[in-house]
Each structure stands twice: as C-alpha cells, then as structure tokens.
Image (spheres, rainbow, N blue to C red):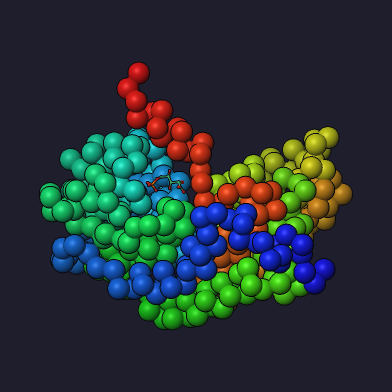
Length: 355
Ligand code: PA5
C-alpha cells in the first residue's frame, strides 16, 4: 500500500479536532526545552548513604516519567526506584527516601493524599507539576520542585516529566545528568517524529502500517525486561488515545502463565506486537522466537518491532515514540478524538463530589 485513504487523505485533520498530532510532533522540541528546566530551590548534594531509595508518586500519564526513569536506570543506580501509584504508600519510607510527587495537573487526588501522608516520614521531597495544589506547595510552602510548562495532555508531557526527574537526581548528586545519552537520543527522537508523522505516507511510515495492521484486532504488546516499560506505554496510549482495549505483558514471566491463556477460543481476535531490543541478549531472543512461533498458530496476527539507536535512552524513547504514533493512527482509523478522555474526566468529576 503506497497511500491510505484515511491516514493519508486530504481530510486527515478533520478526525483530530484538537490537533493532537501537534503534541506528538512537538515531543522532540519538548525534550529539548526540558533541558532548561530548573529546580525552584538549589540543593545540597546528598552525602554517601543519605539516600537509600527513590519513591516516585504519580498516576497515569504522570507516572510514565517515573516508569521511564526506572527502565533507563536499571542496573545503573545502587539504590532502588519505586513508582507508587495510588493513595497508599510503599513500605520503608523514611528520612533516607528521596520522594518525588509528579502530577501534571497538580491536583490528582491519589498523588496528593500519598504526598500528604509521606511528607512527615520523608521530608526529602520534591514535586513536578504545572500547577494546582502541588504548585502551591512549591510557591507558598517552599517545597522544592520543577514547574513544567502547561497546555499538554499529561500523557504527552513525558519529556518534561522524565527530564525533570533526571534533573532532581542530578541536583541531589545521585546521578549526573546523562548529557551524552541525551545527545544521542534527542536527534533520533527528532528523526523518528518526522518519519512517523502525518506528512509521511504509509509506504514509508511504520507507525501508520502498524496501526492499519492492528486496527481489526485487540492489540497485545509484549516486551522483555528492558522493553516492558515501552510495552506498557503502548497499552496505555492505545487505551487513552484510541479508546481501544489493549494488553501488555513481559517475558519471561508470561511464559509461565499467560502463554496458556492463548488456548482461548477468542485468541484469533488479538494481534501481538513483540517489542525487540538489541540489548535483549541471546537467551531472551530465543525465548521471544519460540514464544512467537507458538502463538502464531493461535492468535490473529503477530508483528515485531525493533528499538532504534545505540544507548538505552535512545532505544527506549524510539519504541515509545513509535507506540505513541501507532495509538494516534489507531484513533484516526477508529474515528475517535485522541485528545479527549471522557471516562477519566467523568471519574475525576464524580469522585470530587462528596457522597
Ligand atoms: O493521561 C492522562 O490524562 C491521565 O492518565 C492523567 O495523567 C492521570 O489521570 C493523572 O492526572 P495528572 O497527570 O494530572 O496527575
């Protein structure tokens, strides 16, 4: 197929009344702009042993920056990173916990509750937000934080949220800002945004081709330990942008449970995408190949996508950018507005009203 009647048609933008494509196309410049973000208060670097764990509080799109940080830091940091979703707190919070509350709106109920409960135990706390209650903590109560630009959907602000977390780690002397990885990753992200964007016809556009292949079925995105984060991001982006149910899973664990589920008589309704990575190693590569071979006979379709780039940051971002665009074109093919999130909005609205 050289062109697609919907994705390459002249009326393309009509199915995107809020011009959500501009948020995706602007992702590279957002990442560049994020390099200039600064903390509201200067920090004294932590002494050795002063920080024993990092806990990031956040929900939905605002948790994604923490997910990416944890995936990127895997094996690099001598201390664990936990992403805590919900109003409860993980065990073991204390003065040696570096706490970061991330909420793009600054008003997410679960994140605010968790932060309020955590602050007395873990005063080494930061926030990342655009406004709302969290910004008031920065502006009026002097909590250190990074105020990022507003105007995006939270899930589109991944660059601002992720690089803010790296800046906090740098300021606390936990990890120097990874300038070399960023210097490799961002030009690649720029190149990919152009290659997956609406102006590039389907014959040269992997994101459009994948969306067309996925559209008739329910997408399932499988990754390995490194690509688990992008796999989950694909799932949530497809759900929020395309309003389509999607699943994600991680090898090798799914080889020990989920793989049996594909004996289901409904299996043909699903399309599995395997996210592959040059760093996955021979054992995982063989596991992916055998799993794919086994499932090919059971599910509707199977695809494979490879990360691009050399460094881990570039590779992770390359898969994320592709998935974001796939979710966007899926929305277009399904005729839904990728920008609006009516069910999430209704939930927030109804939960705000006291019973
Ligand atoms: O993508 C979205 O809009 C949601 O997943 C939000 O990120 C989520 O509801 C939390 O809101 P906020 O990011 O403002 O904390």
